[in-house]
Length: 65
View 1 (cartoon, rainbow, N blue to C red):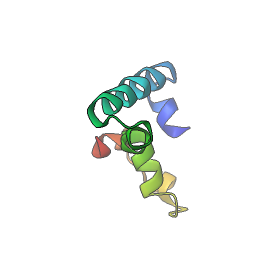
View 2: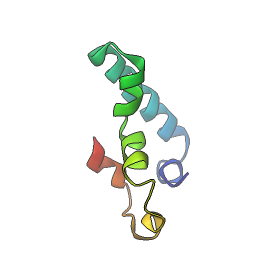
View 3: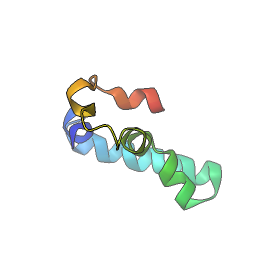
View 4: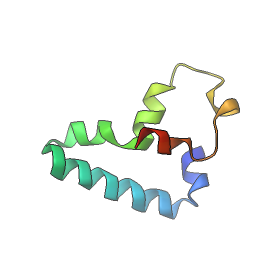
């Protein structure tokens, strides 16, 4: 939800879809494409850190591009 709010929700979904299809065309695999999306990579990388949202920097998903 934090990622969506940072990008004013609509831009989040636009960027998400663009990034997804970029990876689908590049990898030719929908599951791997989903796993390569920067938003998902950030979420999976920090899912066990219960304090992550408190210390997360603004637009931190860019680190996972």
